[in-house]
Image 1: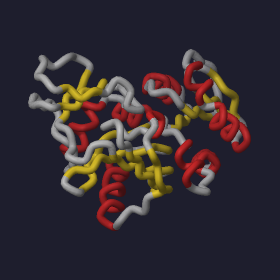
Image 2 (image 1 turned 60 degrees about the vertical axis):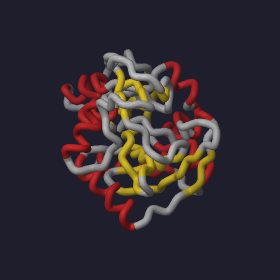
Image 3 (image 1 turned 90 degrees about the horizontal axis):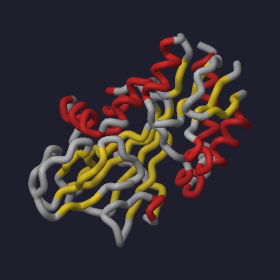
Length: 241
């Protein structure tokens, strides 16, 4: 079966390694976000759920599904969804200071700021109470509902611990309580390959976000797991069903 791997031009340049891994393990060709042709399956590596939705309406299997991408790229909706289902989050619609102000559709810590004076809520942003342990977070990778690995990220210079912003990263073993929390979240959503990020507050993990186009750089640098190959193997099994 032949598939299409969709990246924006900007992200394709940043993800040459991942693209090569996909091509080594699957019969796929690379296309940008404007592609509207046909294929046996689609790997949507953009954050645009409408791309997945278009192909799903044609009866084409898309990895990840549009519902997941839509939820993951609307932080306000995602926080409300998780809170409704009993997943701990830092409070949103927070009008105290300091507060973390983040774009609803942002990723990688881009344009996330800590505000220290009150301001009217700006459309397109989430205002959130800061956790009490800044500069430290946890990412967990999942394929097909199974936990693959987890990495702890820390920064001494920025309240954002993102690896791409210079944070340190180490392989991390989830304890039983953390594993149960991750499995509960995975059970609430229909996903193929995602990252789930957590902050730490009062010594406990709290949900931060879902990365539906999760990167693999930290996994390859900090573990011996070939995670893109695992994802490709999963895709093959899904297509054989």
